Length: 244
Length: 155
Image 1: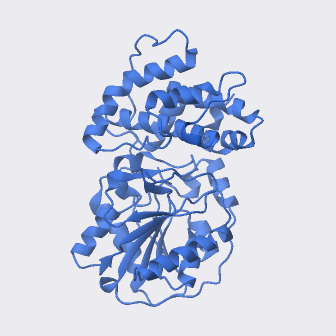
Image 2: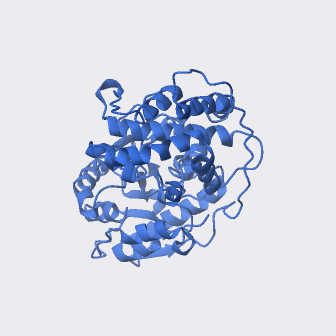
Image 3: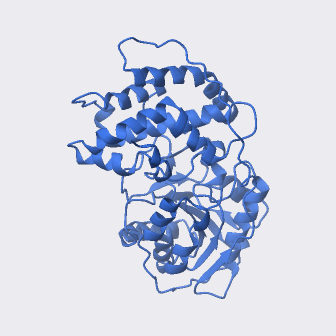
């Protein structure tokens, strides 16, 4: 981000940017930056907090009116609303019967989880009008089947439309995760924190277990792209303690 | 959850501090009119794009165009990193791409205007110097759109 800002300013475009990692911004010295004490993935603090988002936005854009450059790094003073809250999760998932006796146990569990959470995801769609589980081009069942196929010996699942198999696998796992997070947050009760949600996905869901099971398979793959996905684009660093 | 390094999981903090951070010279510092007269574009490294556009690949240094009249519901995020929260963006695009807040500022006359186009890159898998050609291309497009303020938003 700081590099992009430096190059844009050098080309004559004045920039003002959010900094999420103050230590790195201090080193790279972009022209105008506002450090915010928010978690990665939330540069404007919190969802559905328009007044707070506006405060952050005005604070960063105000740097454009400053004359005391060439390097301005300010700190936003307040934590994001709800940052300290961490509501526990209660997920009354009641798996239906396995849909097909031919599927692997793990795939059957993922498909059953899909079915159990589908009403909640439908509710998310009603309230939000969109889904972020839209990266692989698969519906949620095909995303599960495509990812699980990599667990089979000598698997070489065909991605649709000539897409790259490794990129499609990464996106299928992201779709499985995003779809579940959308579904679970549609349930009643206080909003869980992002950490609670991540711990739930990676620690308690069948889709999380599928992704964890893929890690050693991809690490041993003869395909460099698949190894790359397994190494860096599958399991977050702070969840890798779950790997065997 | 905070993102002060001292509050992060040690492996995440160590990774962030291990990133290449060249010390740029701290110049130029381009002057411009008051904010209330500026034309503002968002440039984000969040790997956003319209849902029907190509997703970002690993180590992708290309850019995607986000029309100024985009609906937040039409935005997808295909960032290659799995090490940041997505649930905020799922709930409200403005937590990453503050388009509604910017429109409110423009309507109130607090910024001069919004650009016809905003831009997104995917901020992972490349070294800082590798984004320079993309930045130059974006600067040309921003100049053509008469933009004189770019709001840079990481994720």
